[in-house]
Length: 94
Image (cartoon, rainbow, N blue to C red; front, top):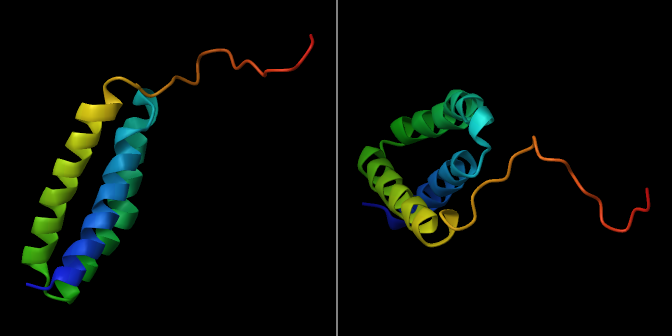
């Protein structure tokens, strides 16, 4: 098992899952599809080409745990905002 690949893949998987987690609800399906078609396919091909299947699964498991931990500690109390709300610019006199 190669620890440096586990760390790199964990960081990449965590960032991709974080983007999906913090996306607005009505756009989440599109973000999931685009992420799986682009970055997910590239990461999958890299893992298969380098024969790092066990490292990839371990990194994915760690990334899922880290994203769950983020959601548990921070995400539940700070939900993703909605773009349907009116945007208010501070300091503007209308």
